[in-house]
Amino acid sequence: GEDVEQSLFLSVREGDSSVINCTYTDSSSTYLYWYKQEPGAGLQLLTYIFSNMDMKQDQRLTVLLNKKDKHLSLRIADTQTGDSAIYFCAERGIGANNLFFGTGTRLTVIP
Amino acid sequence: NAGVTQTPKFRVLKTGQSMTLLCAQDMNHEYMYWYRQDPGMGLRLIHYSVGEGTTAKGEVPDGYNVSRLKKQNFLLGLESAAPSQTSVYFCASSARGGRDTQYFGPGTRLTVL
Image (cartoon, rainbow over all chains, first blue to last red):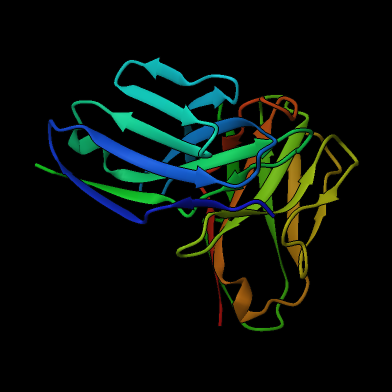
């Protein structure tokens, strides 16, 4: 299957920006997603980007896509303690019914 | 709207026992999915369904069976549980495939001793 990789941990101070990175291997990826998982809960879709876009902004969230390097990032501005969670990158290939997920990055926000 | 619900939330089995995990959605979604989540790994697709009465294999289907007798329910069965099936199981649903958002349930934590 496709490989989607993320670093496992990230710590930031409250009020700083967080940048969570993801790399993927499938050059046919059509949609790339960011999901958030809070403790004991299911995954919640945060945002997604179509592969012909470079950037998408949604309030405090900015997604950057470098299709040449197959690199996706999620920037959270003014990070709050409520942003502490695991963030998953996922990609869907052309015609695929399922998503391929990264390992997840555990974001810890230090007050 | 409850969204996607899963029962049970927790379960402990002995090796060789069987059980069924139930997923229900009230959004009239066509597609439903079962994933497992293991430490240090992303979610991996076990089986999925593109409509009532249909099922298909995902990445890691061995040791599991599924059924979609009703559109709103997707059942995941373990006929003879093994310790390697200790995991957190997530169900998801989407209106269609493609770019449609997948909505996830809260998960079932299964331990096989």
